[in-house]
Image (cartoon, rainbow, N blue to C red; front, side, top):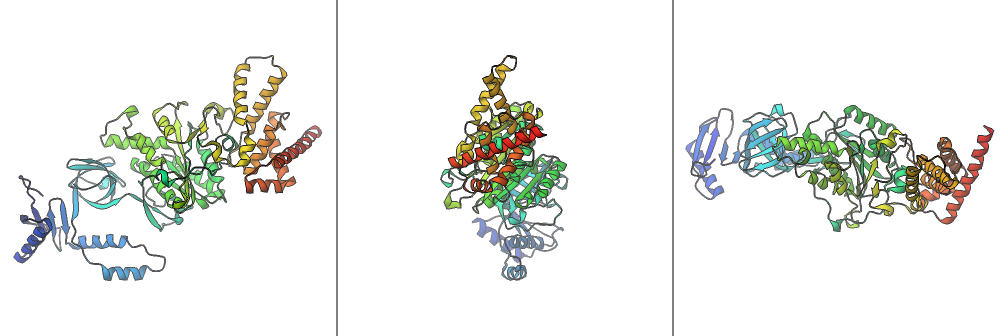
Length: 585
């Protein structure tokens, strides 16, 4: 503490009055530490049963039994034992440990309001540092002001009271990571919530980390197939890309992400699904769907449901990203879904208003853009020197009445490498996935497609654009010429073929076969009602009649002219049989 003139003074507290020799040693310690004479006074503190606690300014030197125990606990936390060596390490730690004489900065709670605690006395605390309160609740520093700071609480705010002691940890918030998290459901602190027992992490990664620089990246050129024909053929996603999924509520955004996760089976891709502000029942249902289809073997679910605090919802995507980076820097490929960042922005807005930060547009703070940019920039395709791993992000954003010009949607659109826009009218008309071909885009484009899919897709976007334009001009016309009628029928057939049921992703050769047959006008004369049956039958026919062709497309990712011609020939053979069966039926 400092007196009215600003000079440093010290207070020694203990249950029993120290001897003069002890006071002299403490005075010598202060003079040696601070390079000057420091006035020292003694105060009785019956709560300290053994030892002494010395406070000089904001520095506290704890020689009590409790302080020594806490030092030893911190020392043990740095030990990373294997499976069978915990007892030798414990014995070695006890033998080698020596108490240190280091200052421990202690602060005191001034106020507690909802999920925010204001603390004084921690003059050297840093932004993002973890603080520990007397009750054991942890918090993270979010605001630094003259003489005080504010932190968000990770636990129950009712366990923190004004006047209680706060201790620095000198550590930033970290997420436990490791292979053992695959197949588990955890909260943003890494605590399992699936009832399958505790998780023993391999190590920890900071939830806030710097994104890889330009020299640490390489171009995005490997496909991250979704298994959805409408996306893989027109808006391909590459490994390391950030592709936004945007649309109104209940238009199939999560369904696209879920199908993409299912499609990564046997492709050596780690998947992470981050649920932010979702209903607990919805997360449980999604997890069960993944488990039933064998996808939880390579998936981790990080859940901060609607009932969780705004603090947990705020750190959830960063925690999931830290887990993904653990695998990415091992040279592996990761797919991470943030569902959804609209609710994440709302949680951050709540915390910012509680922290008394100035509100801006739609009451969001001015740094809400940085909130998401520093998260999404961490997705990358790393250079070969760093292992060549990748992390592909699929952030989800909810719009209101299709308004993509709102504040949060426009922010995230400007950060990502493209967007898949889902339209409500298409969804309710039965076009699922309800991808709006005109407003959706992938800025990586054909670089993220295999040559087979790129060749098979051809001019499908142009054909669909011409169909949409023609459909608008002819919707009130009753007298159409034959060429226009066939063009409309062809476009309607393409739209019908892009419909795909949930939980049924298509493999590469299946997508190529459907595209080649459709763009080759093989299905031109099939009625819309029979197109689904024709597609299903065609894929089964190819698996039976040309298995070598299917395997070759999947293995090589190529579609030479002879394979294209064989696909067309097989498609026409099946068409003849399909039409013959219809006549007999």
